[in-house]
Length: 539
Picture (cartoon, one colour):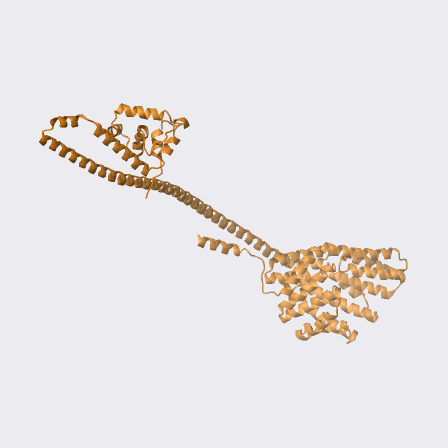
């Protein structure tokens, strides 16, 4: 039984199927925070929409083309990571405004924004056409920076989209060339320059130096800003190369939490985190996070992100479904084990119940036997006492009567020798002596009986009606009491009673009938009740 219980408890203990690692408290706390943050995505989306609607309200009351252009840019900045189609719509409006204003700088800026949004939405051919249509050399300095930055992102996204070593080499070369150009355009003391330098060092394999620069830049970013999320994502990728899993996961979580709070639907961090957790075996969270990433991609309407998710989602879902099926099998095993346990438990309880009933019956029987034994012992004590008292009494009486008989013999002998025949005849004819001896016998019997059963008369009277009860005269029993005293002593033979009391059998029956007629109740069992009267005095 103990072995079965141990087995079942061990099986139930293995039911803990959730992912468990040696993560620190900080990582666990960040994971819980991300779960809570994802649960509130609708709230963050609503806040984002309120912010956008406020800008739209300003735009509706603005008529100056230049100011409308700037407000459109603000909306593009909000939409380019929120809803792709809306961002493209406001870019088209700005292209029209730039054309209306005949403003070349506005036109180039808008087309660069168009190329960037097209690339992050997966329309790479269209994005490439836009980049090709722009005269780089004629761009002002700040738009050259924007061009290089956008072209780097375009090639990075193409690498992720194609996901094939054969095709990534050319894009890696383009990124390196364009990054060198960008760094020449930037001042070495600017954060943007340092950020690109960090990425360059990472690409060259100088991960420690890259991490050092990125860490310092990360400290400067405002918490819950897009820059903070991007910096955290960059640090996570560097620590992945360094093999620092805890820091990789920490910064990836910070990036994901920030992206969700900012309602960033073009969300790389959640997808990357889902892939990482899938590799670590945390199937539940990997499944939940990739579902959230897919929801964001659908909301954003990004073919690029959907394509990347489509490569990973089946693996995560397959592992998740395998786990669910394993849990179902485990549950069936647990249910079977519990059923067996319950059957054994019920059987054990039934066995214990039967044993208890058996013990209870045995105890009752034992109590009955003990009661019977006590009653038998009491009767034996009573019989022994009666035997002791009455044997002693009758030995004494026999001795007395032997003495009297011897005295009578001697008297007869003397009278014969003296020739006193008349005296002998007279002596043999009288019964006075016999009556006297009989009376002495009954008196001694009464006193001896009342010594043994001092409450006999009281108990006997209790069986009679109140007006028919006997009053004892100086420890002397009358004939009725004497008859039932003999019955109390166990002498129930009427012949013996009649002989002892020197009455006829009929007379004894008459006395008994007379007394029973005085009984208060239960005449049929009157004699049995008489046998139960009296407390035995044991000294």
